Image 1 (cartoon, one colour):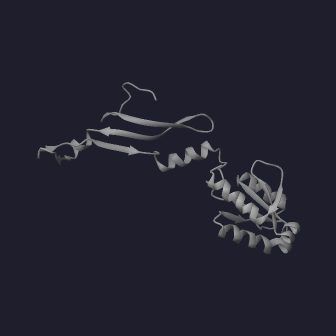
Image 2 (image 1 turned 30 degrees about the vertical axis):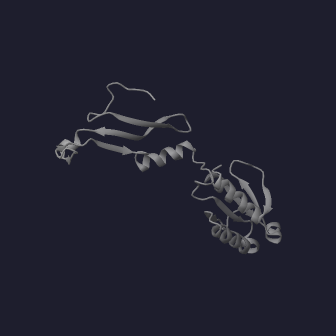
Image 3 (image 1 turned 180 degrees about the horizontal axis):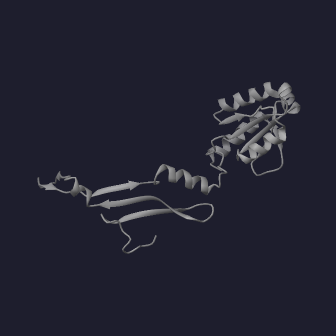
Length: 186
């Protein structure tokens, strides 16, 4: 901590809490302030242990600052690449070809949702490479590419955000891996 003489609020001492974002910039978030002004202005009193009227000291607290500021700092801190447990979309399911793979993709999507994961499916009639690139740009933690092999063997092939390699695993193993990652807040 550091003391800033003369920097206090006009109504009493306060503590400010500052956080750094991913670029090293410092932002004020939370604050706790003693206010001896407002109780007088609003004529707030209580009866003390002697039975006499007394003026309280008011305590203002804002743990995170405004919700908008906090969300903005959170986005900045993670540079938009949220950890799995915090990501608004955790998995995006991409069928290679809707004619052959859509049914399996829908089944996988449903099972992932039933497992408590936040999932979207992208079955648009766009090239697979385009949909993969778009999922990467959206910074979705896991992209699942489902084709013939995955459908026939009941597996999933995933690509983790920021990684180039694709890994094929049994569906249940994938779900267990994600649940563990979420539980451990990795």
